Length: 137
Image 1 (cartoon, one colour):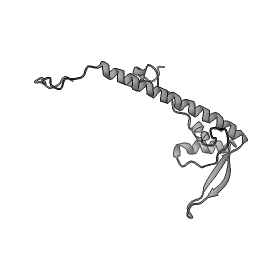
Image 2 (cartoon, helix red, strand yellow; image 1 turned 30 degrees about the vertical axis):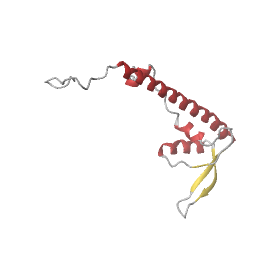
Image 3 (cartoon, helix red, strand yellow; image 1 turned 120 degrees about the vertical axis):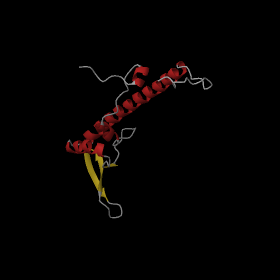
Image 4 (cartoon, one colour; image 1 turned 30 degrees about the horizontal axis):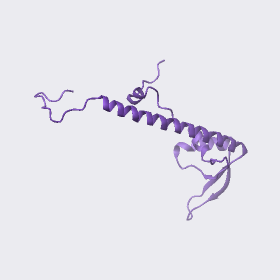
């Protein structure tokens, strides 16, 4: 089975754009700082992070610290990683950082190749007369 064809920019760069980090890794990366300490965070409001959040709680990686309510609104929970969750969070933070760096490097390469491509394509002369049957398609 053939894979998805390369896009125009992927053909210019010569390789596929690296994928985004997994949602589970993105979620767990919130719970560790750069020094490897545990960080408390509120439950995610984004729909795409709710399922990995439920799975992390079910696996025992996150623990409820307390519930807050702002001006009598619906309370929301603050969570912190357990011991096993902190190990996972540190590893997830490293994976997210590596994925973002790979995407940024690909983007820099794509912009450089696009500039080269623009220089290689001859510019249209604005003074040139337009043919009677219109511009060429």
